[in-house]
Length: 143
Length: 50
Image 1 (cartoon, chains in turn brown, yellow):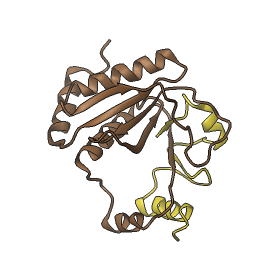
Image 2 (tube, chains in turn yellow, brown):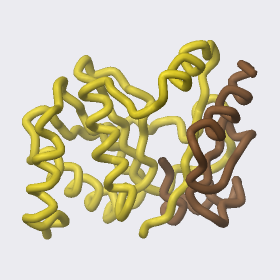
Image 3 (cartoon, chains in turn red, blue):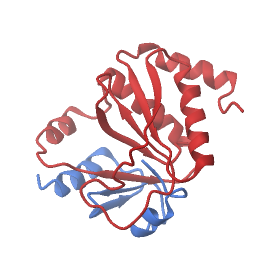
């Protein structure tokens, strides 16, 4: 089953026209085979729209909360965006980016590929001063 | 980005009742699509830069 219709595929193809470097969507399936398959199928449909986007799978479980792990277990698929060198960017999708979050997924792929973000110069300067790892979790719900 | 419905234990840990909810280093949080400067403030605070 295709998740993206022709209209969306056209729009996303257009959106990816100015990608520069390759990006890999690396998926750790987690324990839920069905949701992992949905995420993988969706990622493959996105990757079909640009030669610069790849999808891979890993059997290595990521740390759920880097730097402040608790007892919580991984209950769904987790995708990490890798840059053109294969390095993890720190951008992760814990669960399927559906609904409004699909837009953020595409924006983040583009940001990794072009190395351009929409932050103000002031914010970029302040963030560049950070010397310790920071883990930001943005909780959303499917819409 | 975390899908709260697929990761209910994690969402419960941080009392996610409204979304988006941003949690920084598991300590500081803000709910809502807040302006850049508000998110920046807690990120810098969590990083010990403010």
